[in-house]
Length: 149
Image (cartoon, rainbow, N blue to C red; front, side, top):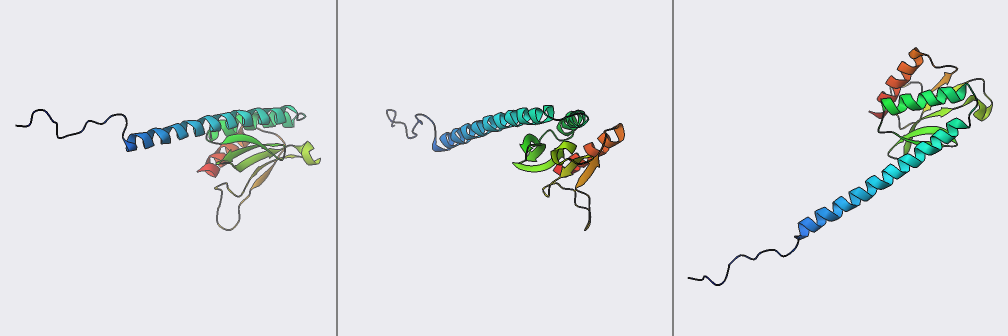
């Protein structure tokens, strides 16, 4: 009988697999922290851009901001050419252009080519926006949800 020696070795410390898993998790946590910081900075930039607008565009932009956040919480706010915009994986999906931006008679709510709005060979990607009623708010909410799915 061999009682003095064990045939199996006890692991001292973590296995290579455990070390790799911990390293992966640390990288994920760092990426999540960066994303949170970027989202917070983007939110601040968008709110500042909105605050600098004149009425009635400021009120519409504030309301759009709330609608987009509620309809597609995965989108990250950011500014795009100085306009409030909302991105997925760093790419702008939709944006708000105030009438003052280019001295036009109406504001514009638009979508980029990364938005999932395709319908056949022709579909709208920008909308003139003179005011926001419950009807427009509902339509925008539906479009934003569709754009990110």
